[in-house]
Image (tube, rainbow, N blue to C red; front, side):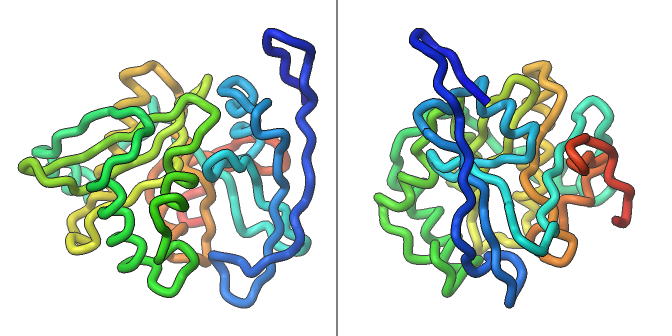
Length: 243
């Protein structure tokens, strides 16, 4: 793969990382395939990579490349055909008072505090639970593509922040964090439905939801959004309900 800007074409290369402990499935080793150089991956190139199953973390563009596991399945939602189920409609209706503002990738103290509280509650003992400002900024605020923050407030109080990338053919839901004290409020569901509506408003056909992992509770929920498409053998196809 190559990218041409104002100067000569820059080739995109790929390398495989050494094995590391899997973040999603206990007792397993994972590897990633990483696209480099980071500075050559602009919005156009990144859109192509996402269609091939890549994601990003800060300036790091990767996809799973495990030796004996294919549990991480790239998924996307075709927004024109999506219809929320009854539970999702209830969450949408319950949180209609949410005020949403689109913001550039800039540091805000209340965003960082919410992120810190979320990590310590949802991922206690994990590597991100004690992220400092620099680590937060590297993960959330560093991007070489077309990115924005969606800030959600309820009665003026910050409840949720979502990092979103705009692609050539859709939106990519990169990362979302919310008030852990309201874990049953349905913020995550509202966020997905809101991003569906944003994609429709911007006339973009897909919402990319990252990886679906059937045996990981934190990732398996994505199959509740139908019809969900998955990347299989290099082609996107509908993931059967109940898969």
